[in-house]
Image (tube, rainbow, N blue to C red; front, top):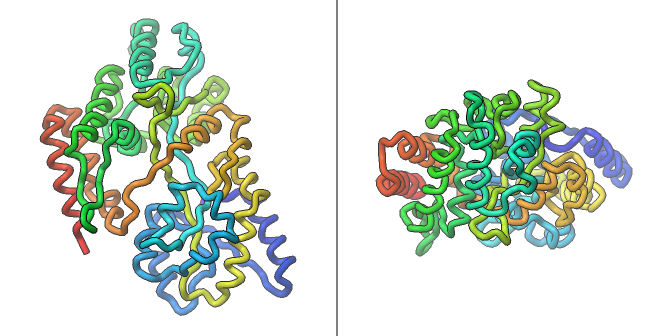
Length: 386
């Protein structure tokens, strides 16, 4: 997929593969994410599918359940399965069998403007939820007279960030009971996480819209102006901001999303990709060899050096040279994923009940209890679809 592995890694990997497989050539094609679901469906049901495909980790369960991917359970050990990132491995599994090999992952961190922190006398990043609220207070006391200042830019529908607070409170968005999945937003734990998100929005007085997510407008472009002290973002959003303001990267750092427990970090949604072999591959054994090569430490280190969490290596020390990437690596240890079932795609891609819930709460249309109850019912209905 576009933006996945760096060119240097792909070139070296393919050259090494071709050297060990005389007469065989790797045809490597880059695809765009937009519209990929339909293109994958067409490719996987054709008479001549690709030999290896990249899947978004939330897509893997659907194709695994449809029987269009090759079972790689017996090959896991030879692909460094003991080093696989647990959350991505979970995404690539279906009914206790392995169909996807973890490729790479990324997760959100709190990116912050070091100059604004220093001016407020803040020398250490917050390590708990309460400390985060305290930091916001100190930032407001120092910079609050600036009409453009925001201690935390937090869009109302940033539901991936919301997941961290729900999970950190001990809640879930959905759980499996007696073989069936249902929403779980109506528990005290889940509601506590939602309430903390609401508290963050109110405490920070963010000007971010309550009815859109971080992409509308692009929060990185807001952060780039230099008046935003913090945003919950993916690491590469710092570089996006630097395209608007080249000076912003030098004064940006990051810390993991704080937990209730100062000794830990909040769980984070681990987004990323898996690699799979279509069931109809004409060269499945060679495809397995290509995957075995990619999961070697040499190439996993190259992935880490490109700024992502490698999927098949527990050592993330290569990310330590950049403070934002280092925070991502630390937070990834508590990585989690949404329910690894085909039906979850309908929750994300349609009229996302989580987004509707958040907007209703933040605009005062509904209480937390009513909004979570309504969202819970909608999620349960979507997960019950065949």
